[in-house]
Image (tube, rainbow, N blue to C red; front, side, top):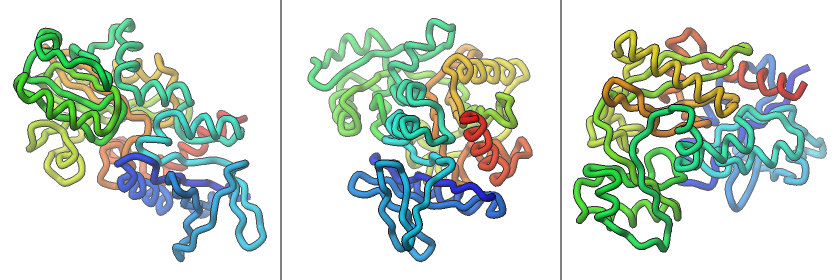
Length: 327
C-alpha cells in the first residue's frame, strides 16, 4: 500500500521562494509507485495543501490532516523542505514529534542548535572543531568598534545569527563600515555574530545517512565571482561549484572526517551540509545547514549525483530512514 507523504515547503523567512523550488523538485522526483505525495505550503497566514490544479485545501493543525471531498487524509511521513523558520529552527520538528508523525529532518534540539550559529559553534569547539574568531552582539548592546577590531580584526563578516542563504551578511573592511553592516544584519535577526575573515579554499560537505550508514558525499569547492559566497553567488550564477573539490588527499580526508564527526557529535539525522574554509591547511567550520537546497542546481543534489545517488533514490531513502526511526 502506498504511503501518504506530505512535502512541506515555504516557511516564514526570506528563503521561502527557494524552499518552494526545493519542495517541488521533491514532489516531481518521489517515486509515484511508492508514494502519494502532497505539496503542503506552510506560511504564517495559512497552512494548505496545494493540488495540481492549484486548488487549496486547509490543513487541520490539530492532527496535520486534510479533508478532500469528505475523505480525511492522514500522513505517514513528512518530507521537510522548508529552509529557515519554522522548518529548520526546530519549531516544526517539535510539532511533528508531539503528533508522532515521522519526518525527514533532524530532531527538534539539533535543528534549533544548528540554526543558531553562535550556540552551535560554541558546542562544537570543545570537540576540537576549528572555527573563525568571533564576537557576539545583541540588539540594544553598545557597539564598540575597537573591541570588535581587537577580537576579529579586519576584514571581518557581520552576520545575522539565525538566517540562511546569506541574508544579513556583510563583509566589512574598516570600523567605519560596521554600523551599516550591523543595521543590515539586525533586519534579519536580533542576534549577530561577527567573525574574522578566513582566506582560503571554501568547500561544502554533504552528509546523509544512506541505507543506514552515515555517508559523506563528494565535496564541492566554492569559487565565487563576488567578494564572498553571497546570495547572488549562490542563486544567480555568480560562482563556480566544483564537484569533486580540488583538494589534496590530506585536505579531503581531513574535512571528510570533520564533517562526519560533526554529524555524529550532534546526533544529526537526515541531510546536513557543512561549510568550511581552509586556513593554514586546516578546515574551519562556518555553519551547518540541516535543510540544504534540493533543487536540481543545488549543491547537495550535485554531490549526491557525483556519488551515484539519483534524486528519486535520495528522497526515497530519506523517507525510509524516517519511517525506520518510528519502528
